[in-house]
Figure (cartoon, rainbow, N blue to C red):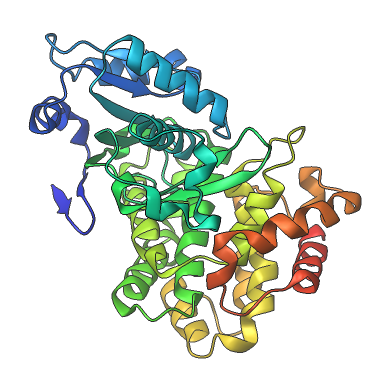
Length: 378
């Protein structure tokens, strides 16, 4: 059993959910709220988790998590928690369920409005202890199980980051078995979310050698060793599933060093309500353009990433990612995802003020984001 204690207790192994009962006792949680979504209820994953919880533990289930978590959904979970006298949260699902759970844990111990705590305006400094949380990821992408942040669409329509060390789950149980049934396209999209985290962390100009080393190791596991392709093409490949769960967790550990323009672009595009675009897919599509934009400031980081990703000398990193996206069956550009040229101006300002822009490898202004979006449009 792999136990990592960089930021919390993180168990990564097949069968890790078998530790759930002991973990609840360890944290003194006797009335947990499971924050999840209807899809996981329908396919029986919630029942699987419930079966690992002792019978004397009173469980409440909130399954209203939308694909992109919203402030109203967070408030619904808070009401359910309070009405049922819950004393802790189990975040079960992909990044959306974990982000919603973090938002609920925050509002349970802090006064509204939620927007007061957003990272772009320094709100993270206002975040104190939150309700205790256990994270159980069912995808290998966001790394939310070990990250300090959550992305939530607020009531005013903005997609904002909320971040504090106090928002990290107390314990994460990362069981690759829970990802075995993930459909190929979702496996690919969430996997490319992890790859983007890893690459942007390495590219970030912040000096943090341990985080950069973790990022390079994750890229080796996901891309260099072919585990993302293997997991997508054969969902039952248990070893590939495990390696992708490790890579996803490493992505979040690495991006303590910072992210970049890819995430700023994706967060801004994710605000377009009628499209409801998947974050990981947006990252995959925007990544090649940002690699081209950053290329001239990356120095020997290019060679290091190419080495661990096993990219041949004849191919550039942006070309390698475009080829990987194509092999995974992901869109080639933003136009294929439904984004039109008239939408681009409305995305530039949200991308500019996104906190991830500050740690891009190369400074990005409004003209830079316009050029990046035009490149990513195809």
